[in-house]
Length: 477
Image (tube, rainbow, N blue to C red; front, side, top):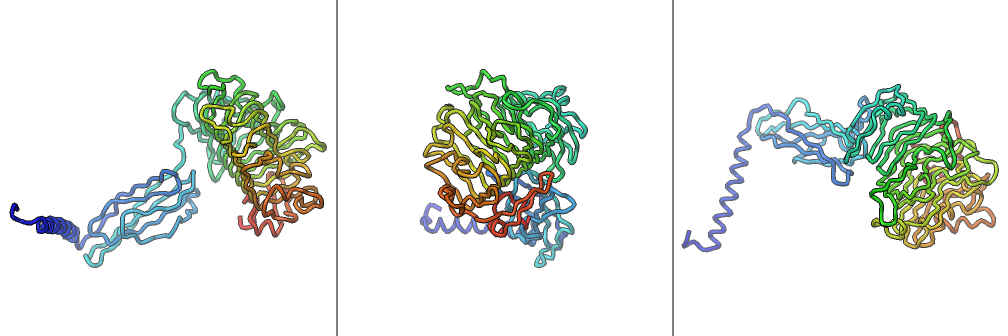
């Protein structure tokens, strides 16, 4: 080829490549008059967890593939995600993914009439879930306090998941602590496990702690409450001496209450035990949280010396069946000491984010303030987002939104909230200044009433049309 010019040489190489590709096609086309098998299927989650990525191997001679993806949280009633029996002329599809879900993928090789190839008679199936892997399953009927006393959580770097049986009943009569190991205690998504809590707390010593798919009944709680008592989430009174920031805070990765029902809580939902714990993420999502006391003279969520960086409440109802008749210190949230800048360890002043979206409050801090802070979420760069919530007889008769946003003056985002107290709309009441603390409120009576056992109804037409508050109480739900 020494005498061949560059252009001719390039053309020769290109022709060789094209011929090679044609050879591959010719090889594939040799699969004729065949009964085809299904491909091998793989399922993975995208990096952010929002998509399923379904891929499969090549089946030579195929006329394409038929793909269906189901949500099978209830295996008796699979729900299609996207198009059923979608024709795909390729080797990958993506579907939106919800967290903590069981999926079933079906892929079938299709006929290729041109090659007289017959497709697979039935699809190949692939089960997949994005649930945390189970470490131990705890049998129904177990006293959880006794179980963890006999089987303490081992020291591990990875998060451990303790699975409670679907619909199973459990008891708990003393505190449970998991040391420095990240732990999830999980029931079943469709049939929550039930825990009768008569004493004790779920105690974090500084590790991640998550409660999920549980119904926790504290109506018969006999343990201590108040300033020296229990909490659903209780930070250990024995403060760690290692792994502290330069300002002597212990950073806790996350505390999460997700898809749980809590009833009859007589005291704290969260208390830091008066220690310098710094909660990086505190989340309550898709829950019903019931308080039932007029005597707990402290905040439902109490940071006494600790701090929180990101606090998120969404798609949740908070209520108190038995609020105090007069004003006392029964607040919803109280943060007593400083702001994120005090923590150190990479936490910057003004780096806090507090978010409340699509929540409903009924008789929560009925005669007091919803929020109180001595610095947290109050700087000009802290973010406070309060949107699409319904407040009924909660937070006293004035300045509700102002107090819940901790008087944040710099970076507040509000909108489409409703505030109804003692038969009046606080946005339109004569002399009220609540409208200055929000934007685009939903006015009028939400028609919100308690049906018992943590169930409510909301009949206000404007509120239903706007789709605000906990989605459970919207008609379409």
